[in-house]
Amino acid sequence: MSEQKNFWYNTRTGQVEEGPQSLGTDRIGPFATRDEAARALEIVAARAKQWNDEDAADAQD
Image 1 (cartoon, one colour):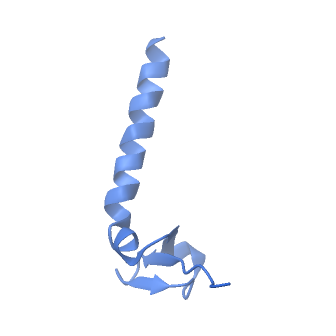
Image 2 (tube, one colour; image 1 turned 60 degrees about the vertical axis):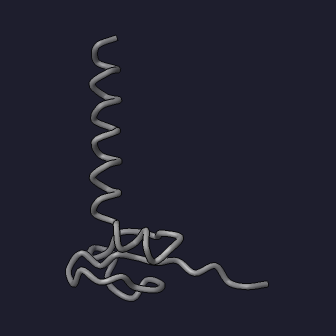
């Protein structure tokens, strides 16, 4: 059985890490691929916008 690799984005260094290598306060993840981890800030911003839009829609109901 092969081990699933996870990737993390280090917010302090701006680097992608394979496996959790730094403090939890300095990283975002896990992500399934290195590419996803490299786009972590973009992904987080898109998710936050989606949640804000959903909250705004719920508030109008």
